[in-house]
Length: 417
Image (cartoon, rainbow, N blue to C red; front, side, top):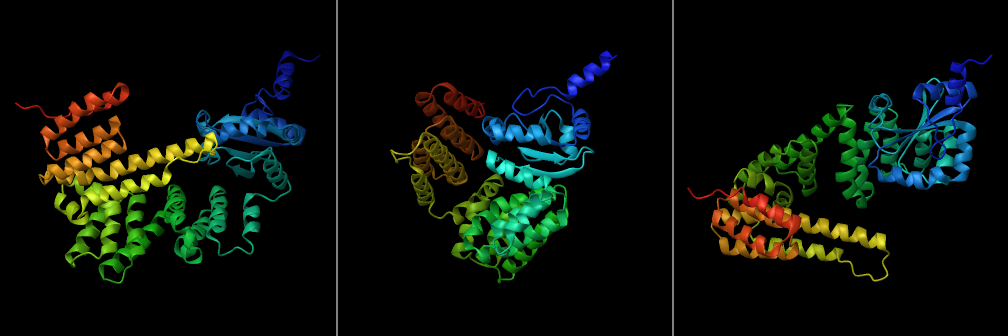
């Protein structure tokens, strides 16, 4: 006679998927089912806010061939990594989606990070079960492209995901030290995505951060003794940003200034990085010495936003939205980058020039955030009448949530006693 408990367990283990190929089982139940049926466990770790996760749901997980393959080879689970945080932590899940392939004892076979269409998923999944994991595939792609920093960094990514941190760091550092020499177009990636990867590795493997710190110190020494280059200045300033040690940028600026007038390119490098720090320290004279033509500085920055004008009538809706988002970002950046200069002008009592710059910024981005930034800069510069005039101007030109941003800033204006 079959007991009620056995019927209940059988029902759980053989339950039909509730969404695509996925089953409603706990992790332990999935391992037991995989052992019973000689299958693997495949977990789609997702979050509710992850765009590529949603794309997987609407494409790959609905593909008939994918559903059939998973039904034959795997016990498939779909797990919200934020709700099952302990399990996600156990398997070092820190990017989404991550598709984890496990043996029935919980040992990792492979993982796929990021969106895969149905064809790529099936190819990668079959490779994983045949013993060719993501590291092997990345290493295979690297053959003949050993000096390609993009391929080397992809290989490093897979090593890092597998917990092979020392090897991953060696690959990342090659990309940082040699990548731009081998591929000049890699320069932007080097100081953005690559650095993000190394800093992320450093959270679990401290030698990664130590290696970046060593490179920063070496570059600083060369700059101070006069043998450093523009590129090394950019490395110092960027590394200090990523390592959360931006106070070193001001210290380096002071050291170089003591040696005499800054060369034009070095001066421009500092303009890109330290204006907010100088404003916070109320070093307004230094700001205006670095930006010796404030109106041209703002005008030139505004000119860059024209590069993102949406003008192609044949552009599809998705591309148009991306371009509009980029244009909005560029405008916000121009406004933000200009605030230290505006504040310095007010503090030096050049209200006429400050007013012209405020007019330009409001024309560029006539939103509450612009008024808020201008008002708060005026308050810091103790130009309280200017702050009050800006608040009144915002009240007469904005409505709704934009006006609310102005009112919140206006509340910070000190009132006469």
